[in-house]
Amino acid sequence: MRRIVWGMSYLLTAVLALSLAAPTIVVVPGVPTISLGAAVAAVQEARNVYLGPDGEPLPFNNDEEIVDFLSTAEILERTRIDEGINRTWKLLMEKDGVRAHAIFREVDITEKNKRVGRIFFLFFRDSYIFDCAAYEMAVLLGMDNVPPAVLSTVNRTPGSVQL
Image (tube, rainbow, N blue to C red):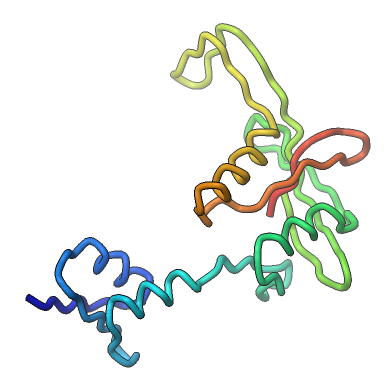
C-alpha cells in the first residue's frame, strides 16, 4: 500500500513520513513531488543556519568552521545578561570580516542541599563545561541539534563560548 503525505515543508513532511512503514510519496505544495528517500536525503543535507548581527545568514558551512571561529575570533563587545542565574555574557565577535553574536558562560557552581525553584537537589552542579560536553556528545551520537561550544577564557575568566 502506498501512502501520500501532504505537508508545508520537506522537513516536517519527511519527519511525519518517516513514521509510516509503507512506501510514501511526499507532496509539498509548489514543489515537485518526490519520494520519501529523496525527502529524507534533503533533510539530511540541510544544516543549521545561524544569523549574524545584521540578520543575514553567517557564512559557516559546517560545525568545524564555527568551532574555529569561536576559538579564534576577536571579542569586540561584551555585555552582561542580567536574566537567569548562570552569569552569562553576550559577545560580539569578529574574524576575517565575519561578525557573530555568541554567549560566554562562566558559571561553575557546586552546592549541597540546594533548592532551585520548587526542586530540591541533594547535590547541585552547574558549570560552563557542560555546554562543551553536550556538544561533543552530540557530535559522537551524530546529532546536529546542539550548537557548537568551545572552552575559552575571557578577561582571564574560564568559561564556554557558544553561538
